[in-house]
Image (cartoon, rainbow, N blue to C red):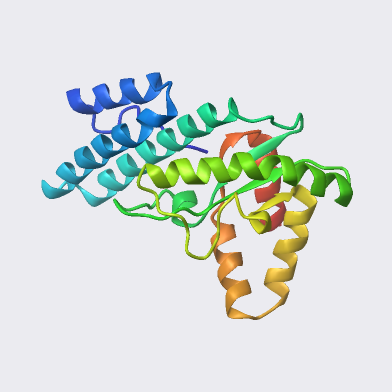
Length: 205
């Protein structure tokens, strides 16, 4: 679940940035606003703000910015009429981001069988890749390991995710174990939260 900005170090500039973020209506304006948010957070870090409080604030702003980018990007694409959820993974899923953090995200969707999953993935990927690019424009570098929703390997149906996670944990290979550890920290960020929580329950069971 995304973190809220409410009751996190309220101050005039924070409230102004929150208001502008909530009112953001043009994707091309997101990078400029993201830079202002980053400068604000960097200024707080320079003033020796409590580490835990700064981390909470970074996570809350990053979650809200990501959600707004997803909301605006959805309008630009033909989205399948099925349940889906954008997943935050790794440090993003744990809400332990620093001022400079790359993307770790994925997407889960509902599908009745493999053929439908393949067809739906083809529809979701352009949207997910667009979100990944928009986030990169806002200062969240693309993941060098490809752990992003725009990668077909991280844009899967619920059943595909279940099978993928099972393969990771049963193979004692470094890459598989790393992927499993990143996935353990998943958090549902946008979309059908019930679907995201169902996936989380599957991997923790």
